[in-house]
Amino acid sequence: MKIRTRYAPSPTGKMHVGNLRTALYEYLIAKHEGGDFILRIEDTDQERFVEGALDIIYHTMEMTGLKHDEGPDIGGACGPYVQSERVKSGLYLDYAKQLVEKGEAYYCFCDKHRLETECKQVMEGKEIIIYDKHCLHLSKEEIQENLKAGKPYVIRQNNPTEGTTTFHDELYGDITVDNKELDDMILIKSDGYPTYNFANVIDDHLMGITHVVRGNEYISSSPKYQRLYDAFGWESPVYIHLPLITDENHKKLSKRSGHSSFEDLIDQGFYPEAVVNYIALLGWSPEDNNEIFSLQELIDQFDYHRINKSPSVFDMGKLKWMNGEYLKAMDPETFYPLAEPYVKEVITKPYDLKKIMDLVKTRIEIFPDIKDLIDFFEELPEYDVAMYTHKKMKTNTENSYETLKEILPVLEAAEDYSQDALHSLVFDFIAKKGCKNGIVLWPLRTAVSGKQMTPGGAFEIMEILGKEESLKRIRKGIELLEKKLEA
Image (cartoon, rainbow, N blue to C red; front, side, top):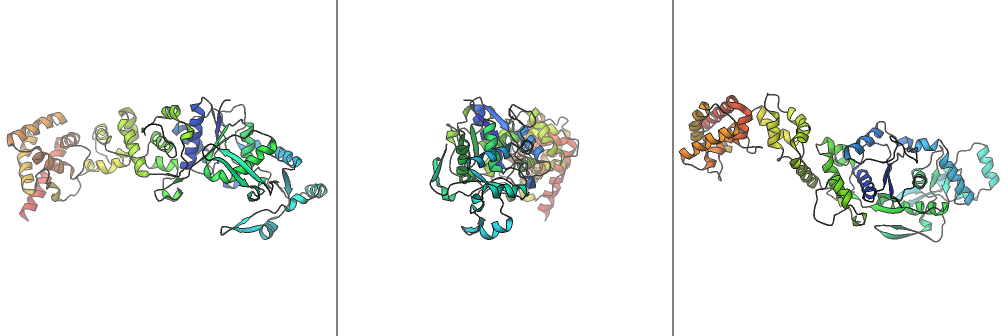
């Protein structure tokens, strides 16, 4: 049996991290076994449709590398792959009528007033509508009369009120529920559209889906799905319900977190491949302790039996670390175009931007980190001369002042401001002075950067700044130190 999985998003906005994980796992399950991965758009809930959301789905799939084998944009043997287009053929209504003929579903003509006054119950402190099967007892004549009169209706699933229903999940095992807990869910709405639950089952069967992967919040609905498969006499798919993704406070990851969607993360400067890698580990663990995987390596190693049942915590710190590892390993040709826009937000002077990007490449976790690291190149910041004092380097205001005054004429006489030339020049000076390296290097770097932490040492910084700007900043440092000493 060839494995066939499907990702079936609704075009209702940005792609939530949980939805992306579902898509990724479905993709990996299929590709690990040489199967097919299908994209299906479930847009039966027209009220929730968001303009442009379909483009977000396609763009996200492209950026993450989750290439589908069949779908609305590329076609396939089981199309159309958009549910609203499938509605036009009447297939969902036809299947619902089959269930009516079997006694597994029935027409319901109850209006909103009756549902809210006679079917409303309080469950766990919440008011919910649990249908009382009122219309199940209508005669065929009454049903035909209502239909002929054009009375609005829905078609409901006819679930038993006695006994139990059991379905099997690959992670949770056999799950059994009392049938009295199963509400008669709506299959066809009053507008003629199928509900998500019903269309989902019909399409999965018609498209030959073998493995259904979804969040464990759908476990409570699965008995109703199972009863539909049984009612039609169809073989049910393999169910895999995924654990919840929570924030660091163990609460459901929400839009308010600012990083609940793939788009949010990309906008915050994360690299798509790193995001995919991290999301793969939110609920699944490999056999070894490795944490960095390419998409192909994930395909090779992914075994859905190793998915955990416990909730997974979305740890932003861990994602940033992983993203940083991707940036460190990135070749310059890939890194430069991605980093350059962030550099240009800060740097307007004609410096060698590639040299600046080389400095920050191994020192950032996400691209926006670049700006705070390099802003001193554009303009020397106001800084406290207390920075010249460093216990480990054994520097203070006095010896830093002396060092900068002594080295200034040496640097003024130099013509070659390349990193290597500056290194030789300064270390010759250190040798003649007979002092520790830090006595010279710390005040020199402080003077040319005005910052305690920089992405490179004095020589790398001075090479980028050039002779004129470097000397200007060193003279400024001498001036500030002199004022401090005179005070």
